[in-house]
Image (cartoon, rainbow, N blue to C red; front, side, top):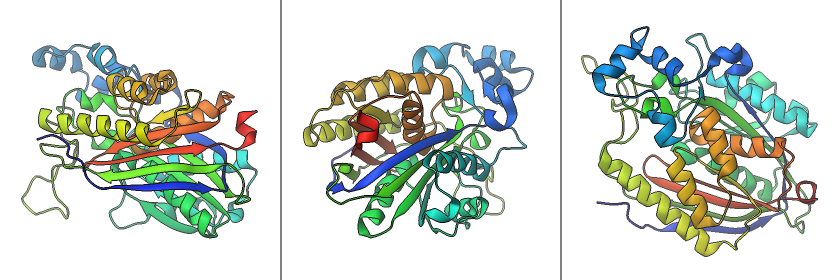
Length: 355
């Protein structure tokens, strides 16, 4: 079975919301260069000093992940941290500084993650407490598409009357990785990113031009924690990500293709726009960019340097591009998350980013 079509929710022309700035944060901001691991360093973190013997025993090669998937290094937290809250807080503080906002000057904080530190605590509320912000706090969980869901949700709140919003996406995947889950254990990294959004004149030609969200059927073993919650006494209580099987990978690949094609049919071409996908592998990024007529290189460079960042990935790629001084009319962001579900958006930038 492959991913099957389902009803798609379409939003159009939610204008009058400006993207003021974006910022990212990584474990190396706390720990220095030692937090950025190449394949050898990642294998040593997973298997210990005898990592080379384990590779030889299982027939793996050191170069496989970079050659096949396009990941050269990734940022991983140490057992001592930083935590997801610390990463998200740093990204948020950098974003607030760039926007020129105080913590008291935004009224909504929307946070997304697939790797929460607690089952019952609101991540957005924890981040707000660290920032000293009294803003309303909202969590979004949508797998790798959660960062785009948070972005879309914040835009709708702003259109409905909120004044300023901070969107934060954060992933700390490394503590959840199983050393024996194959190359998937080396694709993922840790990091966070934040966006500052502000309601402006409703007639302004900036904001959410198009958003598509849908669910698709998926079968097989997903890249997810196989154990169920709450933990069952006597059962396997190792909460680690399993490697996806071929059947599930085929479902996700079909979902990516269908989502990209549907978006291309509904959005006007904009070859000069910023492409900010949830980047997992080189082949996935390249194929999606070709369908959308966009340049894959910024996303591929980010994937190579930082690994796949889950729901934080699209926001982190965008932060990198805006930091570079890019001038563009729009942003196209797309993601397929576990479940399987899809999200894609076209964001029209204000004149501060186009001139």
